[in-house]
Length: 182
Image 1 (cartoon, rainbow, N blue to C red):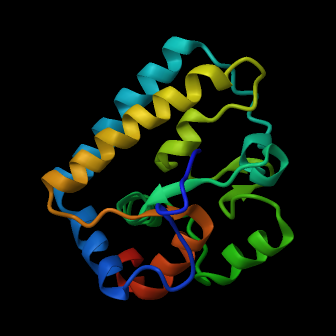
Image 2: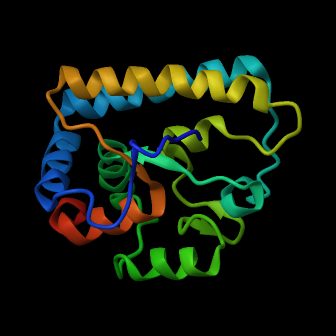
Image 3: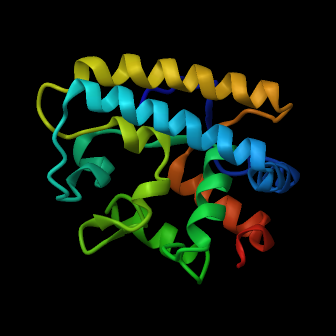
């Protein structure tokens, strides 16, 4: 959703040791449950606004909507750890991520137009709907829950980084691959 220059990370912006720290944190039951609970509360708030998902996969094609998806390092590590047990994570690591990014096709987890990690998707994916008339509440809701996620990082003494989704996914798979094996 929204990012400011001081919060956006690019190539080389995250020390490899942070990926290991986020990976280990994502494995802790209280952290995994905290992320799951935050997402469940967010999902409930989204449902109250009544958007309609047509399962078309259009929302996953970020460039078509003129935005990038941003996540925290913990979100990426949690998603990969959760999804690895149920597939959906590219076995070959970062190559599919970059191929999709270079082509501008959106999310590497989109398969045949649908999200292969829907239940584990990041916060930005949970809030964004390409349906007209939804943008007014999306930004406010996203910012509120992003603040909550940041407070969880603080409560768990975890570094907070706000990262572009596909870049973060590639970096996580590169720097903490053992975290995501079965």
